[in-house]
Length: 178
Ligand SMILES: [Zn+2]
Image (cartoon, rainbow, N blue to C red; front, side, top):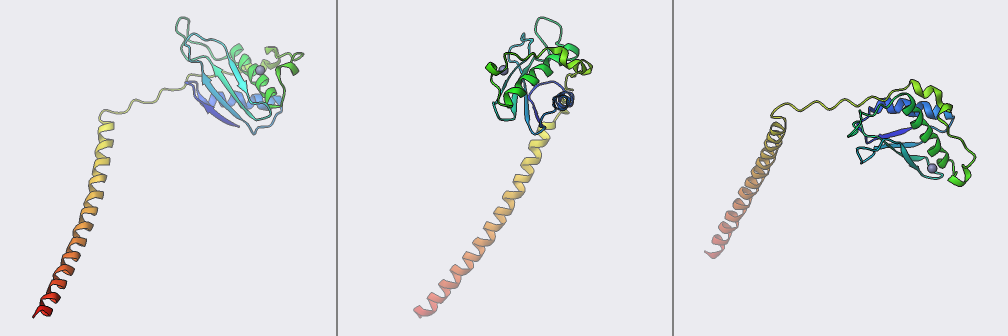
């Protein structure tokens, strides 16, 4: 399974839940799951789309902080809903269209185990220490100076060689003139 996490939810938590879902469903592990978050801050549902007969699904989940309500809790029944959605999308991968799914029941009760899962908010990246970017630019400039110095040295050496040739040819010309 390849998980592409484009959200601020913890990747390894999402991975655990997705892997367990695949295992429980007894389906092929060779698939890609892309997880994105809803663009709207207030969207609280899960939604997805799948490629029919191609093992790739894209799932949208709520953002880590919703604007009006409490932060969305990605655990318990919400994990069940997430698994529910995955199961539905995986059925599309199998080649099923909605018209083929009319008698299918994706009730969350089927995935009681999912209630024990929790997806935490990903840890925010450590703030870079003061002067981090300046020192990066400084190092890059040092490297560039070194590079151009080498080029300059090479150009000077070559010019020397050309001048030697020039005076050599001039000497030969003078001899002939005599
Ligand atoms: Zn569908």
